[in-house]
Amino acid sequence: MPAPGSGTPRRRRLSRSGDFKRAYREGSSKATRHLVLYRFRRSEEKDGDPRLGVSVSKKLGDAVTRNRIKRVLKEAFWVKPDPGAAEFDFVLVARVGIGKVIEERGLEGAIECVDEVLGRSVPEAKDPDRST
Image (cartoon, rainbow, N blue to C red; front, side, top):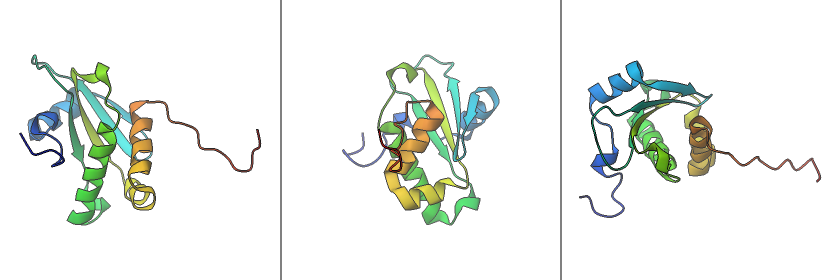
Protein backbone atom coordinates (compact mmCIF):
# COMPACT_ATOMS: atom_id res chain seq x y z
CA MET A 1 0.00 0.00 0.00
CA PRO A 2 1.47 3.38 -0.93
CA ALA A 3 2.19 5.95 1.72
CA PRO A 4 -0.58 8.50 2.43
CA GLY A 5 -0.56 11.32 -0.08
CA SER A 6 1.55 9.43 -2.61
CA GLY A 7 -1.08 9.39 -5.36
CA THR A 8 -3.87 7.07 -6.37
CA PRO A 9 -3.70 3.56 -4.92
CA ARG A 10 -3.06 0.91 -7.57
CA ARG A 11 -6.42 -0.77 -7.15
CA ARG A 12 -8.20 2.42 -8.26
CA ARG A 13 -6.25 2.72 -11.52
CA LEU A 14 -6.69 1.31 -14.98
CA SER A 15 -3.26 0.59 -16.38
CA ARG A 16 -3.53 -2.31 -18.82
CA SER A 17 -4.12 -1.57 -22.49
CA GLY A 18 -6.80 -4.29 -22.54
CA ASP A 19 -8.84 -2.39 -19.96
CA PHE A 20 -8.66 0.77 -22.05
CA LYS A 21 -9.59 -1.10 -25.24
CA ARG A 22 -12.55 -2.71 -23.50
CA ALA A 23 -13.73 0.70 -22.33
CA TYR A 24 -13.57 2.11 -25.85
CA ARG A 25 -15.22 -0.95 -27.43
CA GLU A 26 -17.87 -1.93 -24.86
CA GLY A 27 -18.38 1.16 -22.74
CA SER A 28 -20.82 3.98 -23.11
CA SER A 29 -19.35 7.39 -23.83
CA LYS A 30 -20.23 10.98 -23.17
CA ALA A 31 -18.34 13.91 -24.61
CA THR A 32 -18.03 17.54 -23.69
CA ARG A 33 -15.85 20.25 -25.11
CA HIS A 34 -12.82 19.32 -22.99
CA LEU A 35 -13.26 15.64 -22.06
CA VAL A 36 -14.64 12.32 -23.25
CA LEU A 37 -15.78 9.86 -20.59
CA TYR A 38 -16.07 6.13 -21.20
CA ARG A 39 -17.90 4.13 -18.56
CA PHE A 40 -18.16 0.38 -18.56
CA ARG A 41 -19.44 -2.20 -16.13
CA ARG A 42 -16.82 -4.62 -14.89
CA SER A 43 -17.55 -8.17 -15.92
CA GLU A 44 -15.61 -9.88 -13.16
CA GLU A 45 -16.81 -9.69 -9.61
CA LYS A 46 -14.72 -7.05 -7.89
CA ASP A 47 -15.49 -5.32 -4.68
CA GLY A 48 -14.33 -1.87 -3.82
CA ASP A 49 -13.92 1.38 -5.61
CA PRO A 50 -14.37 2.24 -9.25
CA ARG A 51 -11.17 2.39 -11.29
CA LEU A 52 -10.03 5.31 -13.43
CA GLY A 53 -7.77 5.54 -16.46
CA VAL A 54 -6.72 8.81 -18.09
CA SER A 55 -5.59 9.19 -21.68
CA VAL A 56 -3.81 12.35 -22.85
CA SER A 57 -2.65 12.72 -26.44
CA LYS A 58 0.74 14.07 -27.46
CA LYS A 59 -1.19 16.87 -29.19
CA LEU A 60 -1.68 18.42 -25.76
CA GLY A 61 1.99 19.10 -25.16
CA ASP A 62 5.25 17.65 -23.96
CA ALA A 63 5.54 14.91 -21.33
CA VAL A 64 5.61 17.35 -18.43
CA THR A 65 2.39 19.01 -19.61
CA ARG A 66 0.63 15.70 -20.27
CA ASN A 67 1.57 14.31 -16.86
CA ARG A 68 0.32 17.47 -15.15
CA ILE A 69 -2.99 17.20 -17.01
CA LYS A 70 -3.31 13.53 -15.98
CA ARG A 71 -2.48 14.28 -12.36
CA VAL A 72 -5.00 17.14 -12.13
CA LEU A 73 -7.77 15.17 -13.89
CA LYS A 74 -7.29 12.21 -11.53
CA GLU A 75 -7.48 14.50 -8.53
CA ALA A 76 -10.58 16.23 -9.92
CA PHE A 77 -12.30 12.87 -10.52
CA TRP A 78 -11.71 11.63 -6.97
CA VAL A 79 -12.77 14.87 -5.22
CA LYS A 80 -16.42 13.75 -5.07
CA PRO A 81 -16.58 9.96 -5.41
CA ASP A 82 -19.96 8.59 -6.49
CA PRO A 83 -21.02 5.64 -4.30
CA GLY A 84 -23.23 4.26 -7.10
CA ALA A 85 -20.27 3.92 -9.45
CA ALA A 86 -18.50 1.10 -7.60
CA GLU A 87 -19.25 -1.53 -10.24
CA PHE A 88 -17.94 0.64 -13.09
CA ASP A 89 -14.57 1.54 -14.51
CA PHE A 90 -13.97 4.90 -16.17
CA VAL A 91 -11.62 6.27 -18.79
CA LEU A 92 -11.21 10.02 -19.21
CA VAL A 93 -9.83 11.16 -22.55
CA ALA A 94 -8.50 14.71 -22.55
CA ARG A 95 -9.27 16.98 -25.49
CA VAL A 96 -7.11 19.85 -26.68
CA GLY A 97 -8.82 22.64 -24.69
CA ILE A 98 -8.34 21.07 -21.26
CA GLY A 99 -4.70 22.15 -21.02
CA LYS A 100 -5.67 25.81 -21.19
CA VAL A 101 -8.44 25.34 -18.62
CA ILE A 102 -6.02 23.70 -16.18
CA GLU A 103 -3.36 26.31 -16.83
CA GLU A 104 -5.74 29.22 -16.23
CA ARG A 105 -8.03 27.85 -13.50
CA GLY A 106 -6.12 24.92 -12.04
CA LEU A 107 -7.86 22.17 -10.12
CA GLU A 108 -11.11 24.13 -9.83
CA GLY A 109 -11.46 24.33 -13.61
CA ALA A 110 -10.68 20.63 -13.95
CA ILE A 111 -13.30 19.76 -11.32
CA GLU A 112 -15.92 21.69 -13.27
CA CYS A 113 -14.99 19.89 -16.51
CA VAL A 114 -15.09 16.47 -14.83
CA ASP A 115 -18.40 17.27 -13.11
CA GLU A 116 -19.85 18.33 -16.46
CA VAL A 117 -18.86 15.13 -18.25
CA LEU A 118 -20.03 12.97 -15.32
CA GLY A 119 -23.37 14.76 -15.23
CA ARG A 120 -22.88 15.99 -11.69
CA SER A 121 -24.67 19.18 -10.85
CA VAL A 122 -22.36 22.08 -11.60
CA PRO A 123 -23.12 25.28 -9.71
CA GLU A 124 -23.91 28.12 -12.07
CA ALA A 125 -21.40 30.94 -12.22
CA LYS A 126 -22.76 34.18 -10.91
CA ASP A 127 -23.12 36.84 -13.57
CA PRO A 128 -21.95 40.19 -12.16
CA ASP A 129 -24.11 42.06 -14.68
CA ARG A 130 -27.35 40.48 -13.44
CA SER A 131 -28.84 41.64 -10.21
CA THR A 132 -31.22 39.41 -8.31
